[in-house]
Length: 263
Ligand SMILES: Cc1cc2nc3c(=O)[nH]c(=O)nc-3n(C[C@H](O)[C@H](O)[C@H](O)COP(=O)(O)O)c2cc1C
Image 1 (tube, rainbow, N blue to C red):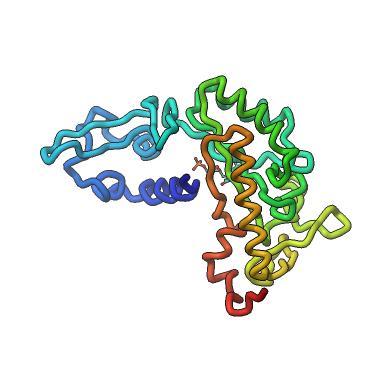
Image 2 (tube, rainbow, N blue to C red):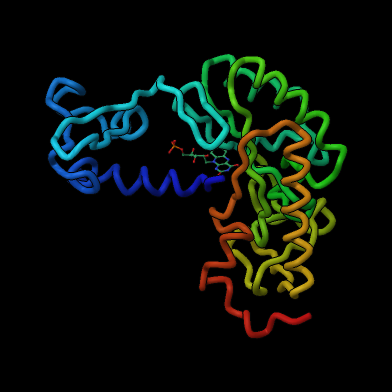
């Protein structure tokens, strides 16, 4: 398993200053000769298309390429193109629809090696909006299985990002404003390590979690992982970024009440 953010932060770190692309981690000796990528290629090409490694103590280098397979444990991606998880806000009570079949399926038809489904809630209260994808109940498995079967038939590996939005849950879909929903607008109680609202439009104050709440969410992540296997996913990542629940537990901005966590 890897986290999506690991990949991204590496990308961000390497993208900006020129020195850190090759000179930073790998040393000047590994810089490819001019002409391999041209004098000044875009850094995203360096990062997404190629990886340079030192093969021996001398300066000989080898490159892997965008369309080279990528093996991680027993999973082999046919190339190094991975589709990021992208919320579609198009599920019904968490259940995937034909929208998801076409959206994810067409990425696989297009040739991506890895197709990661959007942030998928491990609990109903962990949805960002009422339209979020879910995997908190057995009814979610079959429609996801259908999508994953198709994705695999096209030669791609289906991945899932399991998620809990924490204090950023219970909001309107982005195109409906993205603000906290009131109770009489389909809104629900949210949870977080501390009773601190995200702020501005996301005004709902979360319930501070007890130890039992934490265990409940841990169990929800476990159950979601088992259902992900049943649904045919071969790659799973935890969405512990973007200010969602997992992220909150390592952010001093929101985890201010650890001493007060109670049974
Ligand atoms: C419509 C949309 C939905 C997104 N949903 C998610 C998501 O569910 N989970 C996630 O980690 N990132 C999500 N993102 C962020 C993307 O996964 C990705 O990190 C971002 O688009 C930047 O990718 P890039 O650096 O390759 O351009 C979303 C982005 C977009 C545009």
